[in-house]
Figure 1 (cartoon, rainbow, N blue to C red):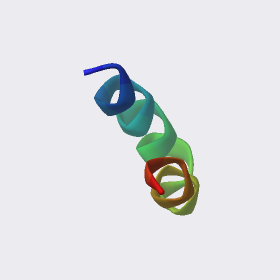
Figure 2: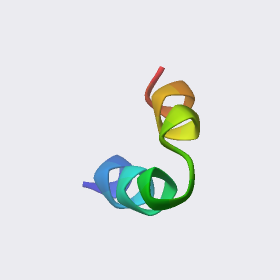
Figure 3: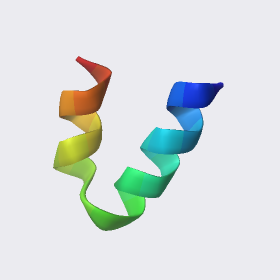
Figure 4: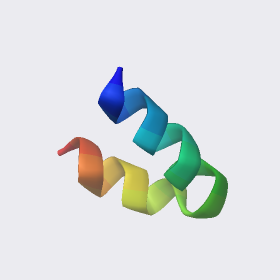
Length: 23
């Protein structure tokens, strides 16, 4: 849940950053 919220926010700015965060 926590990660999902962060991913959604980053996805709006930089999808690449979201990928790195997921890793």
